[in-house]
Every structure is written in structure tokens, then in C-alpha cells.
Image (cartoon, rainbow, N blue to C red; front, side):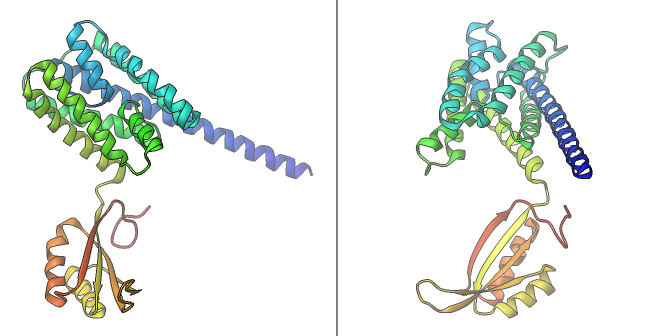
Amino acid sequence: MKKQRKEKKTKVKRSFKKQVQTFAVDQFFYLVGCVSFAISMNVFALPNKIAQSGFSGIAAILHTVTGWLPVGLSNFALNIPLLIAALVLLGWKFVSKTLWITVELSLVIDLMARFVPWVYTEDRLLAALFCGALRGFGMALIFMRGATSGGTDIIGWLVRKRWPHISLGRVIMFADAAVVAAAAYIYRDINAALYAGIMIFVFTRIIDTMLYGMNNGRLFYIFTTRAQELAAAVISEIGRGATILEATGGFTGNRQDVLLCVIRRGQVSAMRRLIKKHDPNSFLIIAEAREIYGFGWKSE
């Protein structure tokens, strides 16, 4: 009995220690992510009037129009109604981390605006590139720990709650596009939107790379009557493995094999030529494989 109690206490201690460690790592990632985002805003975006997406973009517009309204404070104020709506419709679990990040990000942006030692205004293109890289790095760190920065992310989830068939990414994309267009109009500068496009491209690529890694590839589904021949060709000519799956056509009822294989992006053209050579009548689907683990790729 005493032994069981001792083991139970040990498990509780370990569990508590793990929770504390997780919390500490979360806070470190959040802080570094918010600082990186704030640098992108204060050092590169605002001095060069590069339009921003999301609620931080609206906050930047308000700052430009008024000439004094703090970006962080505006960002927090704009998120309040959405956070309340999210609390009612999506629950506290979704809102808690988002609220914390919103507060932290808003504070860091405004504090850095006061104490930042310098701003970059030499080259607007370089400013857009570095703005996107730093913003993407910061957001990726936050996403890695299961949180969001609010704004259009919340709008996307709220719309999905009401209309589940609508794509989350599409909602966020249209909301961000509207903010960028508004910024270009307010700034009276179409270049603000064009540089914003560069910035958005860079930061989304950085996020994808950090979240999904550079070890992604392409997943081929090949519906063919020459599965064995194709599999041998893939192994010998492409240098990749292949799996043959048995399938039955839903319309015809005919049996047909499906060849499943994953290759690197640079091998796509060679793979398509190989398929055309060995079975020009095959049916082909190419999908993106975000992360690949195992022999010939990376390990956990």
C-alpha cells in the first residue's frame, strides 16, 4: 500500500514538473515570437508604409491616419469583440491562449516602438523581405505551441462555426486582402499593396517551412494496369520505393491496381515521363506530402 502511494506521488510530481516545463517553453516561444513580430512591424513595415495583413494591418492604418494611436493598443482593442464572440461560440479553451498572445503581442509592439534604437528605410524591397521573414518566424513560433495571434484567424474560425463548408484559409485570405487593399487606399500608394504581396509570400513560406520542414515531397497515386512494371521502373530509374494497392472501380466494378509512391519535388518531371512511357493510359493524382518519415527520408 505504501509502495503504491509512493509511486502515485512520484507520478504526480513528474506530471507537475512536465507541466511546468511545458509552460516555460510555451512562454519562451511566445515571447520570442512576439518580439520578432514587433521588430518586423516597427523596424521595417511602419517606417516604409508597407501594408500589413490582419488586425495588425488595421492597427497600422489607424496609426498612420491619426499619427499617434499606438499600434499595439489598437490591435488589442480590435480583437476584444472577436474574443468575446469566440468565447461564446468556440469556448474558453480556444480563447485562453489567443487572449494571452494578443495581450503580449500588443504590449511588445508598443514597448518596442518607444525603445527601438533604429528603423530601416534604405530599400523598400529589402524592408518587405525582412518584414516577411521576421513576421513569419515569429508567427511560426507561436503556431508551434498551439496558439494564434487573433485577428483574422478568429474571424476564420467564427465563419467556419456558422458555415462549416467554407474554407478557413479562404476566409483569412479574403480578410487579409481587404486590409491590404484598404491600406493601399489610405496610403495613396499602390506600391504599399505590391510590397505587402512580397511580404505575405515570404512570411507564409517561412511559416510553412518551419511548421512542416523542408523535407516535404510529392505523393503519387497511379491507377494502372501495369503496376508491377511501373513499380520496377520507379525503383530502378527514380530510386524510390513503391507500394501496390488493390482497388475496384466504383463505376465499372473492374479490378485495378493503384501504385503509391513518394518522391522528392525535383523528381516530379522524371516521374511523369516514366509513367507516360510505361503506361500512357494510367490515371494519375499528384498530392503534396507535408512531412515524410522513414527509410530514405528523415527519422523522428
